[in-house]
Amino acid sequence: MKLSYKITLSISLAIVITTSVLTLISNHELKTLTKNAINSYLDRSSQLSSEKIDLWLDNKMGTISSLVNSLEKLETDTKIIAHLAQARMSASLDLTYLGLESGDIYRNTGLNTVVGYDPRKRGWYKTAKKTKELIISKPFIAASTKQLTITVAKSLYKNGEFKGVV
Image (cartoon, helix red, strand yellow):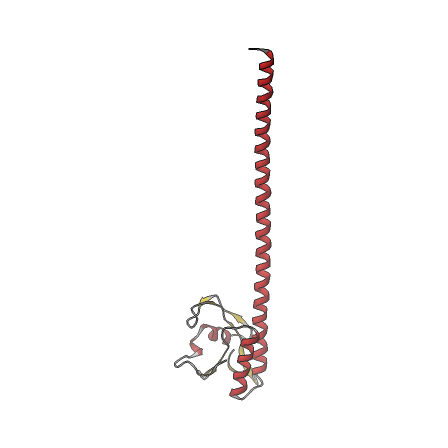
């Protein structure tokens, strides 16, 4: 075998090995950079989603707290229903209720609009009755809408006496 042929073969082999090694290194670095970019994007997306959910929930909680404050001063059915309807629209709530200790329930659509519905038997009512603080239920599938739902509720007192739950 000629020396020039051996030198050419050696140089060609060195080029192939160097190219292969550089390709593997570049591939590894590209994978690492891509993985880091994806993780960073997912972290930021999760953070933004969490912040958006917090703002959404704060809006609902503020609306219910304000509604309770307003209802503490109201006496007439018409005004109670109007306030429930206004709160529902302003905060994009699915439903707004005022469940009374008597078992009656005001909805944004009227008084006792669902026959046989007793708010006192509902988890949201029982939980909110135990505290004067705003409560948030665990997510559940709503019987009326068949949608994943949470309840934001707060007990209603007039002159220090428990009246019901919004």
